[in-house]
Amino acid sequence: MAIRKCMSGYECKQLPLELSFNNLAKILAKMQKVCFKDNNLHNENINRILDLLQSTQQKTFIVAISLGFLPNTKGLTDFVDGGAATVQKSNLDMLQYQQPWINEVCRAKIKDVSGKSPVSIVMDLIEKYVANYLMKTSKKTDGLYLYVEKKPDHGDPQFLLKYYKKYGFVDMTQLDDEYFYMHKLITNKYH
Image 1 (tube, one colour):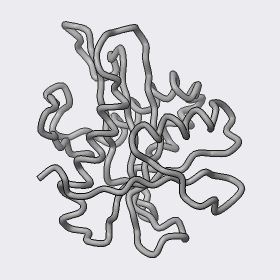
Image 2 (image 1 turned 180 degrees about the horizontal axis):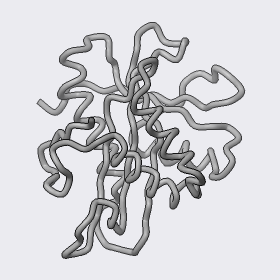
Image 3 (image 1 turned 90 degrees about the vertical axis):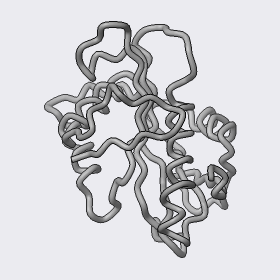
Image 4 (image 1 turned 45 degrees about the vertical axis):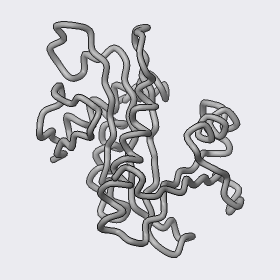
């Protein structure tokens, strides 16, 4: 079960206080159908997301989500624009301590609407959570991490590297042939 955590400066009344992993996976799968061109055949993507949410090895502890709705929208999957990302804690067998790793970053723009990019909101929500909550309980946490596939099935890794740099991420030493790794140092600046 996912528990809603509202961050100051953001409205979150559309999401229920609790949301089953299955319903959360359905929202994420609908988004990924747009941003990753994943058709979710035979519920493969929903099942993959459920495995990710329920993993005990690299536990997902944040699903940051920003959904835009038209007036009088009834259901959570009726969004017209949305952004989401998951955050797992891991050392990926290369860091001394477990750190938060951003994954599954996705924007699903179904209709053109004005306003701030939902991915910008998601990245801000993640950073606020890490600075305000995680760093209070996990003293070894030093920021945020992410990785970009060097040879993805779709998308341009160079575009993504530039994109994440605008959020303050910097390249790390090249550690393998499969991924580019990035890091963003965070201090508790939201207090």
